[in-house]
Image 1 (cartoon, rainbow, N blue to C red):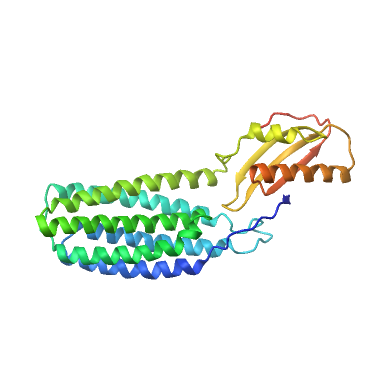
Image 2 (cartoon, helix red, strand yellow):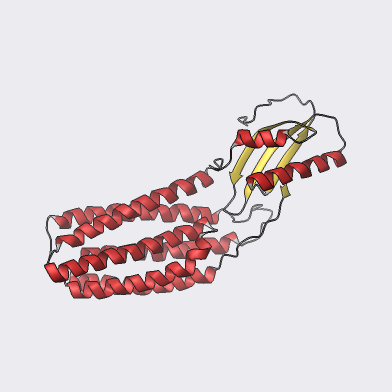
Length: 300
């Protein structure tokens, strides 16, 4: 397997630790405050925050596992651990959202008096705490799907706290206690939207689907332009994790060349695949007039 080295953004696990501690603090405060005030929106926000604490812990463990070196028994190491974490975190977002909707609909038809002052202050605390966590993870989220899942959890938490704040103010000044249920449903719908998107993205990677930005036919056309290449076939392209995009294929050569000449040909193929398609791990099987299927994609 050939590898083209690229500069990697160093994802910092300590940012996750800080976010875990901050979210644990706000979760405890919101649960106590929600029980005292009688606010379902506040309790739902606390449950969402608690799911974030669990997801952040899971993300941190996955982050540490992914940095372990490969071994005889784990030839890829634990590099896909972060994809599993992203998948689980996205799933919890959707599940928590559905639970919130159920509770909110039930409360909507039976509104309860709520201590809105406490709701307002705890919502403000949630905005500040989650806002800090979002700032800590923003840069890492741009480079890592696991960190992106944690970042989205925290971002939705911050937006949920904003919604709770708005609801608290409306209850404080107008006595509209039904707003508590409405805000809960709005929060939950947003959770489902962002959760499903991340769930689809992580599932595609776990299933080894060809990335959306890779056009196999275009890739083949570019490789076929290289002198000495007859046909690229038996192609597989997949993400091992966010940083590594792999390709394996058979390369039918136009001439019966020496291995040293094939090395030069392979180098040209590597450059094309890296610079035009961002593929940085390449495994090519050389062939010359071998009797086997020559389709681009072959069911192995």
